[in-house]
Length: 436
Picture 1 (tube, rainbow, N blue to C red):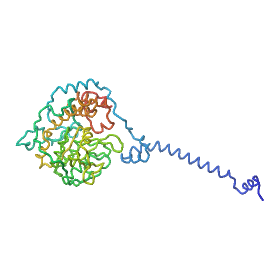
Picture 2: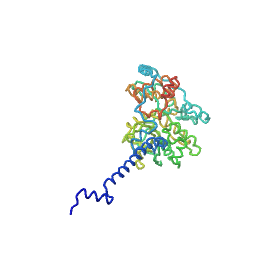
Picture 3: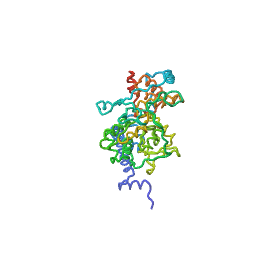
Picture 4: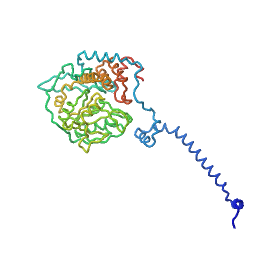
């Protein structure tokens, strides 16, 4: 016999099986969970960002990989380019600067032994006096190799296609024919840690001379704060020279280098570090150190150990000449060379007039000017020109060149690495632009 619907509902109520009895608790549970979830998200959104900002940088990047929207929790949201300074000089001033420079021969300034902007080195008394190299029996006399001068950035040129200097260098070495290829062996490769390309690259270079330590030793000296985004060339060099008693290795750096000079240093068995730009994984423009350990003219390439990109199973990564020069000039073609004190005369011969940092500054300035002459909208050349002027303490001219570079838009990380604009604007009294 079939029960009617009303009869079934009546029996269900009698036996405690009413459908509404289960719906209400379920709805209450869902509502409670929803309320708890919303409250939890609100608390998370308020409380987690400060915690996130206290995480190490590598951990922040890891969180962002999982949750891309966490980028908005960063303390500073990156911008696309630096704005033009408030008190910027006009384009007419930049044009007049380059025009006047093209008509005026440059006289080399005195070699400086002081590191600009490095107040912590002011008490250092170990830096030898500035020296002017002169040839003796085809080479430079002992004791005349000047130590590194600070130019945490590149140097610059004039608007004429002639890339040569307008003054006669004190010492021009006799060019020796170079082998068509060369490679340094015995370098230990190491993958860099977070923000650690500088210490790691220097560690690899020192391994050529038998140094056995890992990157953390160099990193603790160069950047005690692991979140420091930059190690300047003078800091790299100072680390080597301060530890030369134990390593028996010294270092110096110059700006305004060229491909032939790099090859000459390598062919004389001197490891060379350069600073260049890199754009990994579409992360935008940033600075990066690379250890050069060879070259091959047949393939038109340098060979490098790259702490980020690898080392090609010990054969060295390929860095095509033209491609490398473009990224290298973003840092004014700065280079660091390591050498044992016993081979100082060999290094002088390989460096030629670059023994004198003032010569390197002048060459860098002339190259920058020449690049501006070829392309007036070349922001890198304008920036390099400003840096060269800073090295020569010509701050008014430096400010004009930097203004033009900023007008042409620079990548937002530019001043992570190169600090010339701070010095130029400060010395001409443009304090608002320093702060901006």
